[in-house]
Image (cartoon, rainbow, N blue to C red; front, side, top):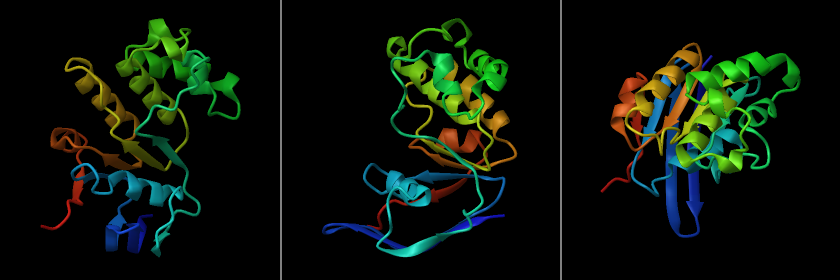
Amino acid sequence: MAFELRHIYKNYGDKNIFTNFCHIFPEARTTAIMGPSGAGKTTLINIILGITWPDHGQVCGLADKRISVVFQEDRLLEHKSGLNNILFVLREPALHVDRALELLGLVGLADDAHKKARDYSGGMRRRLALCRALITDFDILILDEPFKGLDEILKPKVMAMVKEQSRKSTVILVTHDKSEAEFLGSRIIDISPLR
């Protein structure tokens, strides 16, 4: 079932971010949110997640949905290994070790599974954050600039992996890169301010 943003208004002081914003996010489809920095892309994600409350309006249809997120920041547990960062989000981690190692292999981190997250490079950290989000059972996958920091060789492979792993889910992608949106087969919402 789709979920919906109804008549969302949001201001930060004198700065207006959203005025009567409405959108239906269709089930099992990818929607890309695009726009310049400061347009409100991450704010919109935070409203969907309940991290930020709109001044007016509501989010409908999420009550029974399982949501997994890759935030703009990696939010890793620095003292834990890559493998344990992934397993940390699960209720019964011991049952999912093989799956976690499989995901790490798919993004080229199999040899780094036991390395501490603090020793990962920027691109490795991003891939680890993706693996952690993908290991959960989710209905909705929210990706806030998930491919930043990936080199030109790795990025297409990681995007293909994400597309395959989330093909039956509702995906919301925040990106500045139209080619990423197109690769994932996204319907694009452009929230650029009106000029």
